[in-house]
Image (tube, rainbow, N blue to C red):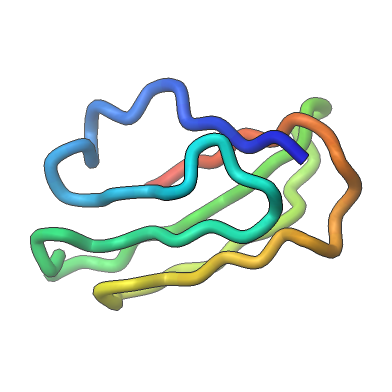
Length: 77
């Protein structure tokens, strides 16, 4: 599995994602303790949504070990 984060300008000062690239499990850390929720959406190469969750925590663990190997795109909104 390959997860990479290409354009991270909007949240770059507020959120940290690691490891990058990942192997199925990764963490999203809310560095500045955001006062609004962030929605994580992961889609596969074909645009099919494989994961979606909204959080308002300092640390969010994401487990994608149950999906097939491939390239996925992560969106934060």
